[in-house]
Image (cartoon, rainbow, N blue to C red):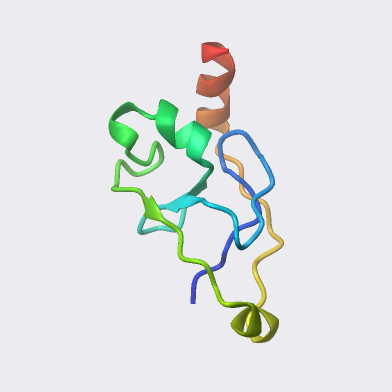
Length: 84
């Protein structure tokens, strides 16, 4: 079962379970704005392909809630801040 992480690992933007987000096979989670800045639109952690995160239906979300654990990639955040 996907964790549905609550934030972008690069910019730490909040991502609701129904928001557009991208994940890789390790479930690294990114907002669309950060993905647009990644070279080749690849995961900066593993280099893998990023895909749209599926939306869990509301009834299933009640039984299997989204994660509340925030994950932030320090290397991505530093790179994003240096681009700004």
